[in-house]
Structure formats: C-alpha cells, structure tokens
Length: 300
Image (cartoon, rainbow, N blue to C red):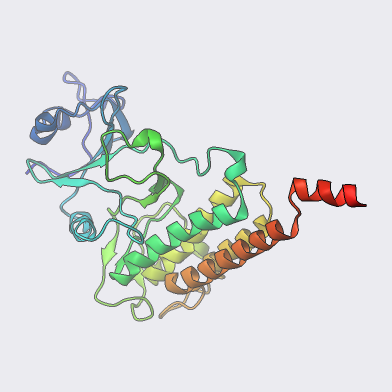
C-alpha cells in the first residue's frame, strides 16, 4: 500500500510541488486505469481530484488515509439503505492499490436554481434533509465533527449522467476523514478534544460533546443557506431556528445542554414544516380563484 495522503505532483527535476497537476501515484493508479477514469483537475490539492469530461460521467476521487476512521465509516454507511434519512453520497471504496473513494462529482452547491423556489416551505425542506442526515449518523453513534457548507452537496439533474444512484435534489453529506465512531450515543458521550475543523470553536474551547458539536456546526450551515437564498417570506423563522442549533455555548465539561440534540431539532423542524404547509394551504383556500372573483364582481 502506498503512503497516505497528501499526494502531490512534483517537478521531476527540482522536486517542487506543481499544484495544478495530477500526482503520479494517481495517474498510474490501477483502479483508475481499470475504470478508464482520467483525472483532470485538483479539487482539494493533495487529497481530492476531479475527472471532468463533457461526454463521460464525472467523478471526484479522494485519496483515503488508513490512519483515520473514514474507510470504516463509509463501509458501514454504504451497506445501509441509500434512501433518506441516509444522506451518504453513493460512492465506492477501491481497495486495489492504495484505497481511493470514487464518487460522483456534483457540480453545484446552489440550493435553489430559480427564485420562485425560494419559499419558506422549500427552505425548511432543505433544512430537514441536513438535520435528518446528522441525526441518522448520530443514531449510528457516528459524529461527523467537520460539518460545514462545503461538506454538504446538492445533486442536480446535470450531475446524474452515469450515476443512477444519485437522486435529483437530494442533499449529501461528505468528508468523514476526521469523523469518529463511539460506543456511546447522544446524551451519554462525554466531551472529546476536537480535531481540526472548518468551523472555529467558540471562545477557544478545545473539548466538546461530539454530537452537540455537529448540531452547532449544522446551525452555521443553515445560516449560510439563509443568506444564500434570502430574501423569502418568513426568513426570520429559519434564522431563529439556526441560532437555536448554534446555541449559547457555556463550555460544558460533561454532556452538553447548550443546544438540542439532532433528534429534537429534527422533530421541531418537521413540526414547523407541517405548520407552514397548513398555513400555505389555508391561504390558497381563502383566496378566491380569478374566475370566482370575476363572478362575484358581476353579481355586485
């Protein structure tokens, strides 16, 4: 097995890293040759590279580290039913040569392509997908530990060529390289020393209930979604909800009570969604149809 990542392309004469090139270890990797996958672009230099072609299925290939729990976590998640609430991106782990994660490349992170789709109900629906994905992991005693806007992808129809298992409009959680599996679940697991994360821990805190940390980070993802999709009617509701998830961190030394569990957050979110749907339905029922208004006007 080759050494773990990062893998870099280097100048053969002076050994300097060539950031825009593909590493030799990937260019000669037997699994990529077997599949006919030609990598073209770096996505996360040293770790993730893309195969972009206008007439072939597009892939993202991640060099996995045997020193993390990522392989074991993906193996667990990929054995399960891929339907919701499982929001694991359909992918394959290649064990031929150095282990690689071969994934569909999802081109965009736009939450809604048309402004008409940016309604409170639709935004809540996106929220539900994220929170149920986190809650699904927590039910398996898995904490992601590095949830952020960039680690949640949205499948669009343009991404589905050659990838029949990808669901249009579904949100997928990726990057489990710092994730952990625990023997205890939410409400039982004690704080751990956080790994390096893209969300900065509040107040310089280094120990965190891992499940509560995921909920905290999910709150920031939702805030980013709100800013990306605003304005829409009722945005204040989603802002209040996101802040509830972020919580008012007090540096709990035991099981954290500064924010809801993912399960509680999901229950409240689904209840909100039902209320908003009912209000929208009542609003439509109370507004006369155009032909009805015309008849009423003639009668007057």
